[in-house]
Image (cartoon, rainbow, N blue to C red):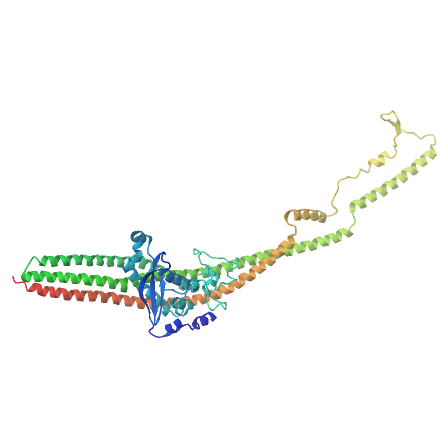
Length: 527
């Protein structure tokens, strides 16, 4: 709404002129100009509105239309006459700027363009358009100053509707984030709007029919009528020469036929000119209009696709956040379990150590018992103590106790293999090794990812709210624009058909008068 107020309150002199009734913009002439004495020449078209007059070249008209399309991507900006094709340039070469019929055609179509923009309820109030009509304004400065300098390269990165409660027609930081997806023209909508889906089909059908059938056929007819007019001109000269070979009423009759043929040539040429300006050019213009409507509907399609892609991205981020939060919860539970195990492990008794102590106590008790038995035997048999000797490598015999051999054999030696006190120690060791290999601090990384995901979700959520409101508002505005254009198109078609009929009626009436006079003269020939 603020943007609309800023447009309507510019208060410039051109706006005041356009608000007056019956104000019409004229292109009064076209002259060759050059910026430097040795520079290339171009055609400058003189534009007059009331007492204000300025000059613009074709490329500036082209940039004006492109600027209005960028500022208002949901509005149907009128077309300008097409450029020459490469074939035309190859055929005409340097004579393109001297092609008077082409210059006159451009004058008519550029004048129609300016008046269509001026009569548009929103484009006519745009101050960029007013600056184009002002005298003494350097158009290059307008192109490089606000609001045009503030527009993003991609129109999807700005808000176009006034219902989104965001400044429209300006670079938007949220929509320009790298988190916001950019859809392609081939994106298939999940839930298309039936109204615009039908409008797209109808517009594509009309555009193809007008371009491939009506426009081509009408150009062919006009070309052949022009050839017919040239043939009439030659035929009229032939009849006039033929009358010189006769005399009396016959010569007069032949001369009158020649004059009727000359009149047919004149009227045919006039009909070609009228058909070109009052029917063929409007047909070409509406053929271009059909393609412009396609572009506007395609922009709305991309805006809708952008909203759906943002929704999908937001859902994906929500799933990612839920997964990270589950991992965080599992990690915390595992950490708590490990802490409990460590607490229990520090207070637990080592079973191996306990078994070792018990074995040592048993051995000491058995040794005491053996010593007691040995002493008793010595007391009973003082001379009966015997030693069994074994030979070693030095021939020295060493006593080998026989009483303790059976006792030692009943207790096998302890294994020297190291065992874990509990599974927790093994888990800690493996986890520590994997932590060093995979990530230095997985907890910090995971929490950082959670933070980034939440920030991305905030941006996507805000972008989704903006695009939803923007899509709703732009759809409403676009529907109004299509309704307005449909009424304008019906009026134009009515005017075109009436003009087409009047041109043929006038052609036939004037030819009828000429040929009736010729018949009167022929009837004077006596037989």
